[in-house]
Amino acid sequence: MDSWPVAERARTIESVGRKKQKFAVRGFPEVDVGAGGPNVVTLVERDGRFEWTSLLKNDSQVNRLRPSKTTTIFPATRPPPDLPVKSTILQSAERGENFIRTYLPDVDVPAELIRDELSQDAKITEGFKRFNPYMGNLLHPIVVHEQAFLAFPMGELNSDLNISPLHDSGDEITFKPSAHPIRTFDTPIQQIVTTVPGTQTAYLAVRTFGETSFIGVDATRSTPYLSEVAALSHQDTGGRAVVDVVLSETPFSSLVVNDFGSVYRCSIADGDKIVDLIHPAAEAKGEVQQISFWRLARGTEGTNYLLASEHSLSQIDTRTNESIELFSLTGTGVVTSVENQGADNIVKLCNTNQLVWIDARFARRPLLAYKHGRQHDRYLEARTSPSLSCKVPS
Image (cartoon, rainbow, N blue to C red; front, top):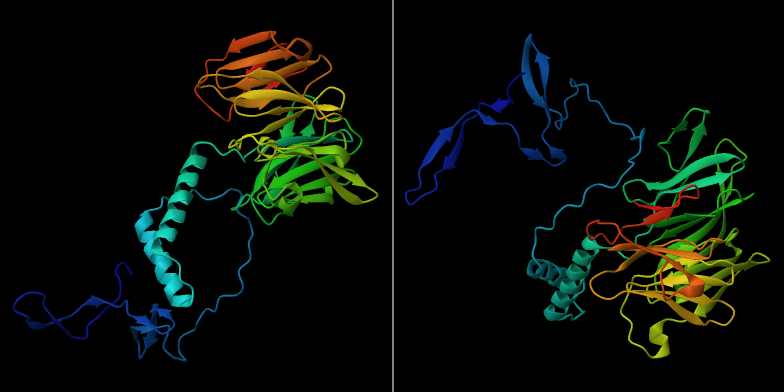
């Protein structure tokens, strides 16, 4: 049929206007809604003729198709696009006020307080669209037992962890992604970090909105087997969210920094998790600190590490907690990334204007300062290849 079924019963309606008149109409679409939902219709043969009948009616001559339980045959692999918010803050505040009055009549919340909270939330959301300091690297290789895998988040909420193999055939490397995740977390994944390639056992740190999980990866099977070693919650880091994680060769001495700039060391001893505050935030020292961007990097000997904020880079000794400022920025530029320090004792960092190499022993004079010419991008990162002597922004 190339037309929607219509009802030929006459229906009387009133015209809209100053002079209301009643007149009959025919041929209106059969789209009435019944008690069970939309009125779905079908053709049924009776006495040699076909007629329209509703599936909602109790008609024994109609063969109904009853749906069974749905089964997902191919899961979603990416989050849906964000839909623009069409309502204003005032409209949202009115809806919230009506909700509270309807379902919580004993709770008295001023309308001005609801508007202020929604305005603050809208301002934070708009700032996260430009730059989210809590978002880290979401794509990381895992190399263990001469096997290579790629770890990345997937799913509609970005809370599913996928670990898919990389096959080296000699002439080329083939990536064979799997459509099914190996593990699902309660909240979206914000960062994935793995141990240095070449170690006997690979460890994985997955930072989500709710907690940071340290996971061991067993690659001796065809499908990697994950075993959780420890989990770090917000209560372990001063009630603040973690913004960056650094792993050593094993997770037994991992470093994390929260959005206040406090650095914690997470250790595992006899199966028990031990969390120590090794560098308090500047606010705890009596200074005003409103920066939420912090990045960590490993030092040279395991006794020091690098801590970067928006406009400075410091080297901190874990034994004495002494801090030495290696680099500072003035003007409009901000630090975007810092690499782990290698045996060459060179600190390599990137900001929105330059790539900078610094010898930690002579920090006053940089070894290299190169203007990369990229647009202002706070997500800009630089990584040094061992076989190259220059940096390539990514």
